[in-house]
Image 1 (tube, rainbow, N blue to C red):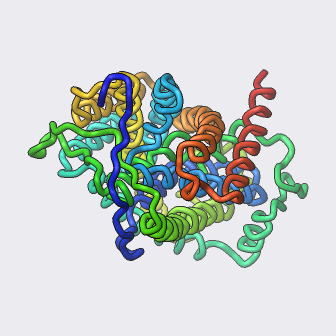
Image 2 (spheres, helix red, strand yellow):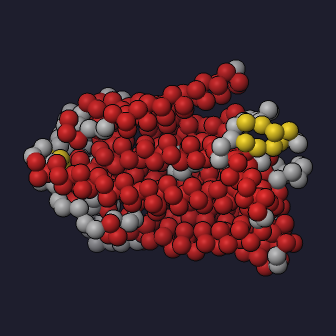
Image 3 (cartoon, helix red, strand yellow):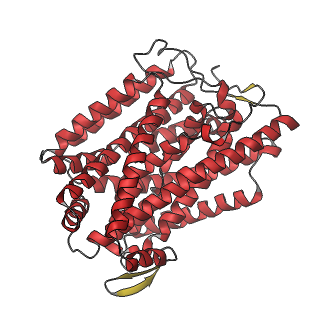
Length: 466
């Protein structure tokens, strides 16, 4: 890249393939959500306040669906991550995304949560050491795969394909008809807390935790923006002409990687091809990310409700362990053991994907800020990755033993970050894209409503803290 410009090439848009060949990036972004909102925060909220708050997770994942689609729009059209577009808007924006990504996800709460569940299931007794080993294994997995994107996508497909059916079968085995009806009422905001009915939010709910859960109803925070990286790496749209990050040990792994992409001339054939792409990626993301993600979150919340809701004193990591004990009592002890193993592995896999995504974000934004063309992206990516891994290990060994606190802290930071970039995406896609390719009026309305919704809860959280 030249020192002061971020050039955008030009080529014709390729044809869209059949839908079955497009499945992939949404599994990664769904996997990011499974370990934060689906497995941890929303079940924890339900264990405290009941099923009357599950409307919030549907609102949260719906907001993130539309955010992700606007991120995908940019990547389809320009064959580059949305961070490049942000850097063209404001020279210093990369610094914001580096800082907000590190402070939002640098604390390894998800990995420590997974390590704690695995150590409890295996009776090891040292979750800090399990977490350290887990982070080293993650680094090795991400470092040796031939093509980084393919490694992450394949891992998430297998884990979701195994973990989700197990949890669904477990939840609907234990739930009664009354439990399912309570879940349905929760979708319209009707619940019961301490014997008193409430509408939408019960008295005394921790707004910061609710805001964090909203942010993690899906990938959350800056991780939503990496959907543009995965669209590019999968070769969707103009990503066909983009570079790929290869492993440290693969031949060619030190190759140069162009951060900037190429767009297409706004001709009638190219616009028709774009609309075919747009319909296909909307269906793919709606089925995998929104429908499967919402169903999984609701199922896990139902499971938390029928096992630990109303049990006093279950805070932090204890509520999941108690949930496993209750599952074992109502079925077989081996089933409770399997629940801990499955959720622990899902959290570990989420931590892997988080480390991949955050390393991509920090790497791209660092190079965008420096505007360097002689630095190889693969090398910078792996330096950033292993620095984060070593930082995570240091946090484990420093004695942190309440991963939920770290997760809630990161979630609140990411909710504020989402509020900021929703406005930037609105501006970017409505000013820097050709008129024929810009969002429809109703999609702009949804994005504006998302901006206002997040802004309200961010403001309320600040006022509560002050």
